[in-house]
Length: 273
Ligand SMILES: [Zn+2]
Image (tube, rainbow, N blue to C red; front, top):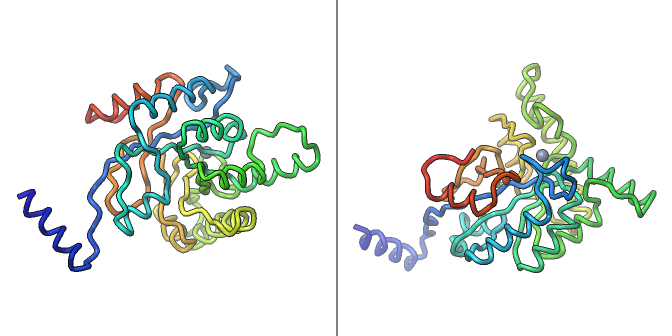
């Protein structure tokens, strides 16, 4: 049976008919802050030493990091993903991605997805202009551009100014679908425009939902802005075949090493919580 399938695929390829990509398992790890401050190390913060351990684990176990553009090429053009693919995502555009992550990405020759918030990036930029020595917790545009230009980081959208609990970019009960879609589009468009301005015309292709709060009406807005993927906070391993929306992720808490997360997630049918 398997041979017949392979023959059919080869025949389709020979005839020039687009071949649907085969399903591929993809773990996506969700990181937030990397800090030396013990106060913030916990569910959403890990130490620089723990981040280094993750890279050492990836390296010694033959994992290959991919970013959204790799998934798009896989789904749209059938460009195969590398063996043992894994995606590292960093939310909120923290300065720690410049300080700790970028050097490790270069040292280990890996790639990561960084989802930034436009309003916070603007504030960090204004503060850096006023006082170049100030240490803002968020990335400024010069740092975002350096990450982008490094070839090791892919910048994605975490909304311009919708990162406010508890709803984030989700629809309010009191607003109509139309009002919601316009509000979301206006906000996300701002960050798309900013990125194009600061990153040589580049615009995010994926949206990372703040707090993982998702409204069904949002997908239409993302697609209208040219986005083709989105990240949720639902835990699990993805099977990539066609849709790249609502990709699941696994939170990298400081309490479990990446090695422990991976061995648990890949060897059990249960989700890692
Ligand atoms: Zn966030």
